[in-house]
Amino acid sequence: MKFLDIGEVSARSGVKPSALRYYEDIGLIASVSRHGLRRQFGAEVLLQLKLIAMGKLAGFALDEIAAMFGKAGAPVLPRAVLHQKADDLDRQIHGLTALRDTLRHVADCPAPSHMECPTFRRLVEVAGKRGRRPSRRKAVPRVD
Image 1 (spheres, rainbow, N blue to C red):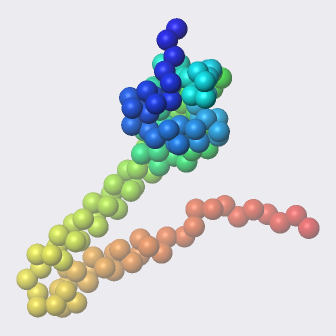
Image 2: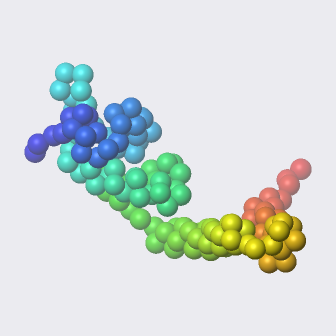
C-alpha cells in the first residue's frame, strides 16, 4: 500500500498541514506511520477529508463529525441525524431567502425613505417575530 505524506495529503485535499495535525490530534483522521518527521497517511484519508469538509459545510461541529467515523475511520452516518441537519438547512435556506428578498426590495424600493415603505415595514415586522423565537432547549428538572 502506498502512503501519502502530510504534504501530499495537504496538496491533494486543500487542507493545511496544521489542520491535518489538528484533525489527527482530535481523532478525526489517523496517520499510519512516519517517514522521518513527516506523518504518513493511507489513501482513504482523502475521502475522510472530503466527508469532514462536507460535514463542516452542513454545519456539523468537529466533535459531531468525529462521532460519524467508526473504527478505522470508516464513515458511520446516522440517518436520523442527517435528516435533522437537512431540516435545519431547509429552515436556514428559507430564512436566508426571505432576507435576500428583503434586501432586494430595500435596494429597489421607490419610496423616498425605507421607513415610509409599507412593504419594508411589514418585512421588518415579520423578521422581528422570527428573531424572537423561544429557545429550543428543554428544561432540565432540578434535583435538590
